[in-house]
Image 1 (cartoon, helix red, strand yellow):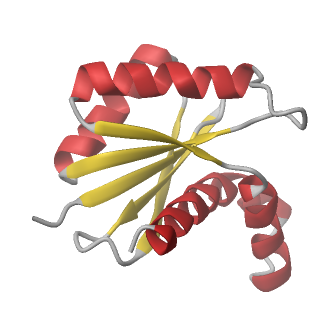
Image 2: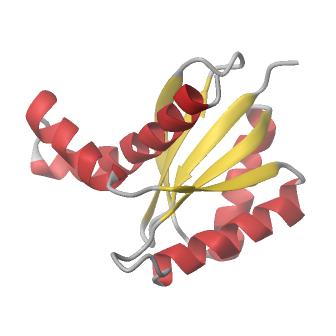
Length: 139
């Protein structure tokens, strides 16, 4: 049975989101959510997982240049563990190297989006890039 994949670009203020279609062919950004704290974030994501019938969650894993995990990477690992416990779905951590930067470049160069509007769009576009990469490598 086909099922959706949810991609998460974790941020301390905003959490970008992208969702696959049920056949796992297309990746579409969906509106970001505010990060109101670990417990609230898990509940917000659980609601989306249930509503959209998500079977797999991909969480972007940010690393430093030396490959170690910084605070955002460590928070992503904790989020993945909490989602597994709370939602009972498969959760995978995926390298998100340069997805935020790539998303910013797309918004500026290809779409001409203003600085004010980029903040809200960049996170979900980064999640979409994580999901698109996964879909193209797992067909």
